[in-house]
Amino acid sequence: MTRTVYYTATSLDGFLADENDSLDWLDSQLMDEHGPMNYGDFIVDIGAMAMGAATYCWVRDQLAVSGEKWPYDIPSWVFTHRDLTAIADGITFTSAPISEVHAAMSAAANGRSLWIAGGGDLAAQFAALGLLDEVIVSIAPVTLGAGRPLFGRRWDLDLLEYNRNGAFLCARHAVRPPALTELP
Image 1 (cartoon, rainbow, N blue to C red):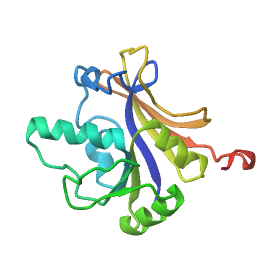
Image 2 (tube, one colour):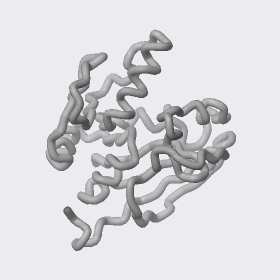
Image 3 (cartoon, rainbow, N blue to C red):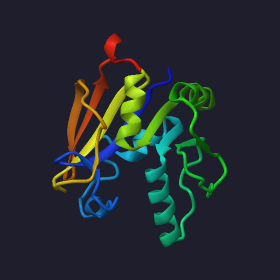
C-alpha cells in the first residue's frame, strides 16, 4: 500500500533549518546510521519523493560543494514557481496542484511509499488535502530560536512509536485527517 510520509529532522524548538536555511546544527549531532528510525531503513521502501524549491536548492548547493551526485534513484518532484535546472535525471519541476502530483507520484512509486522530503509548508499542504499519512521526525537536542518551521500550520498527530537514536529523539506519528471544514 502506498503511504505518504514526511521524514525529517528538527531542532527541539521545531525548526528544520535556521534563518539562513542552514542545517549546520544538524551535522553536529550524533546518530547511529543503523539505529532506530534510521534513514537507510526508511529509504528502501520509498518509490518517489517530493520537496520544495528551498530544499532542492540546499541539496543542489551541498552537492556542488562536495562534488557528489544526486543521491536519489527514484522519481523526484520539486514544487516551485522558479526557473530551476535539474541536476539529474528523474527530477520534475512543478507548480501543478498537489493532488495531481500526488497521483503521478503514486503511479511512479509502483506500490512503494512516497517521501515528502521538505519543507514543512509543503508537508502541511499535503496534510490539508488528506494526502499525508505519517510524520517521522528526529528531534535534535539543539534550539535555533527561529528559522523554517517543522510544519507550516497547526495539526493534530497521533504518536505511534518513539525511540532514541544517538542524540536524537525519534518519533513516528499518524496524521489525523483534516476536518471537512479545513479542506481547501
